[in-house]
Length: 263
Image 1 (tube, rainbow, N blue to C red):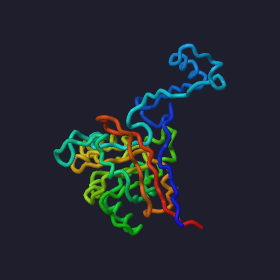
Image 2 (cartoon, rainbow, N blue to C red; image 1 turned 60 degrees about the vertical axis):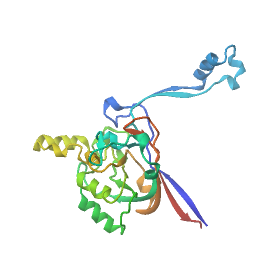
Image 3 (cartoon, rainbow, N blue to C red; image 1 turned 180 degrees about the vertical axis):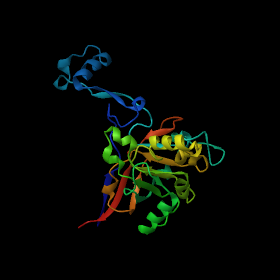
């Protein structure tokens, strides 16, 4: 009899970690049970602390963050107002649910240096190595090893990244959701900025994201724990995003589901 193994592919949203640019670092105001008891007095006039279980009330949290904090799914609207060469871009609340629950494919590029480009040829060779042929709506995960630096400033410059051609290589085959264990689907921004400074070529700016102008797609960023999947294919990915009206992204807790034979 088979049973399913579930692998959490997300990071936690935590306050004050230096793994985002300063303007994007999440803030969390935690209300503990003692403070919650005081708040409950406003909702239940006349109640005393002694009337609450252990003198304690609820706990809750107030968050200040962006839709791109923590592990999240970017919608085509994040990249440009239009997709599919002219159609209005989908916002995160418009993403077809069918895109977010499909067979997964894991491509390993941990051998590549930080800031190195993952090309279409690289993707094709990795697919040949794992003996897999991409089919429409597969969810393709890119492993760079950058998640090992999560929680540090180094995270922002760790990992290789996709480019325009490698992204289109996947979307032209019908892929609509992809993901990466780094801060960005593109190469780290400082590497892109340095290349633009040297060459003056605007095509290097956010090229993998801007590929969504031609073919609309979603990508997950800041994934983690991809090694725990334990296989390059033969698993399912579930990654439904939080529904935020008109937003460019939504928080997501992606899960790999692996069917294993019971011993």
